[in-house]
Image (tube, rainbow, N blue to C red; front, side, top):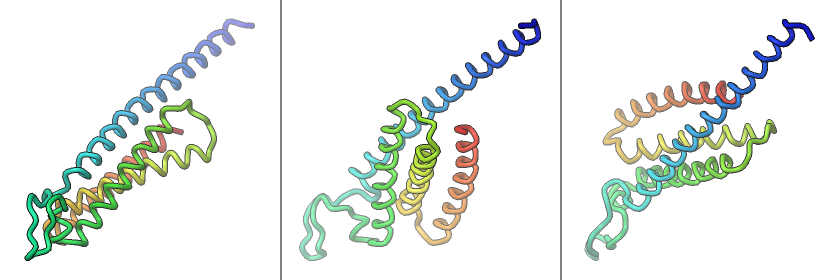
Length: 161
C-alpha cells in the first residue's frame, strides 16, 4: 500500500465516522422534536382550545367536561380533533421507529419520512383549527405552514439520505 492509498483510506474512514455522527445527531434532534409534538398534542387533547364546559346547562345542551369548541363550532372542532389525534399517533410511531436500530430498507425510510410529514401536517391542521378566527387567517396560516412543510420536508429528506 502506498502513502497515497493510506491517506485516501484515512479520509474515507473519517468521512464514514462523520456520516455516522451526523445521522446520530439527526436522530437525536428528531427524537426531541417528536417527543415535543407528542407532549403538545397530548396536552391539547386533554385541554382543547376554548376549554371545556364547567357545568351542565340542559337548556343549551351543554354537558360538563365536553369541549366548548365542539358545541360552538363543530367543523373547527372536528378539524382540530382529527389533526391533533393524527399528529399524536404519528409522533408516537416516529418515536417507536427511532427506538430500534436503523435499517437501510427503502420501504422503512419511506414509511418513516411519511410519518414525519403526516405529523407536521396534522400539527398544522390542529393549530389552524384551534386558532383561526376567520377564513382569511386560516388561509394565511395554511399557506405559511405549507411553505414551512415544503422546506422542512426537503431538508429532512436530503439529511436522511
